[in-house]
Length: 497
Image (cartoon, rainbow, N blue to C red):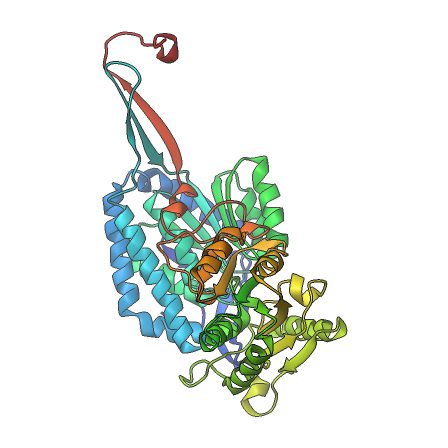
């Protein structure tokens, strides 16, 4: 699938060039000299072609029996499993995260596809007794139509699968625009769908910039669902655009996730969790641990242990199995990370390790930065409040659990949080009172599983959830059905007094 350096859009079952005639290069963030592929720089005409194809395909796809749709998804999952290593290697080349993490990314796509394949024989509604004699009541799900997906670069196969598979199993059709930086993984996913039996027009892909393709993907009247993962700023604009036509709109946006470490915690475990949560995927996760709230009695020891472990992390090209942290995705993200490090120092946080771009040798080929930790972080600082999306961790101090919870909730986001404690009462109190969509006990803020809902509160999302059966509510409408077999007019509450 990736032997060729040139990749086209996928519209109505065929790989086609963009109407614009323009392309762009996608390069390996660990080695800027390596061109991963050349992709189409699409325009509004390409989007219209894709939406038109999806609209036409919807007429038949929605009538496929859901179990038959599930059988196709099952074959896709089997194929992804068979091709897992190749897909993961290619993902590391285009995105930069270490090979073990891209294997996990591909595995999420496999898990989600198997899971939604099973929903083809469920898609449960409910039956309920009628209040009238000789009358039957039930609910069923119905698809909506064409779904537009705008997906990010940090999970270039997992997140597209979170959106695509529940949409397909419900009977919808899809137009997806992958992130400019990571179109290869989506192209690979689309190719598998095509080869394993998805009919022409049911799944379509256009590549290019969000600024050029966002409006036509959102505002086309045939599009009935828009699902977006990215920044809160862009998500707010998408929400406003969708509101005009009452489109379903699912938004998964920013995070400023906290790990609470109490004085009774297993410190070794808490450090392992914080290290993985903060520096896994180079901190480029919406669920990444970017804030630590640590009890005053153990903050010194915890910080020392974190410094030692962070300094020992091996940073480099993720295709090397010994590497523990890869590069930032591009120059812009590297510049953002470095600017926030300067902001942290200016605001008075104590830089205890890291803080520099890695240079020399192979580092000069990519966008590498040291794992960075700040101590003495306070709630007024920007590195406490703003999402950085890089390997920068801030440690703040609390006096007790009540203060830790208050500090944890001091953010405009509400995606993920965790607590490390041996006290079950503290664990349950924090689980109840920290206002996030995801919560972990004695585990880091990352590590979601596909059979539980994924999403957040406040400015992280708009109330919808991805993954699990919760995703089905995004991509279907409920229909209440009343079957009256009495042979006479029954006027519900009027005749039932």
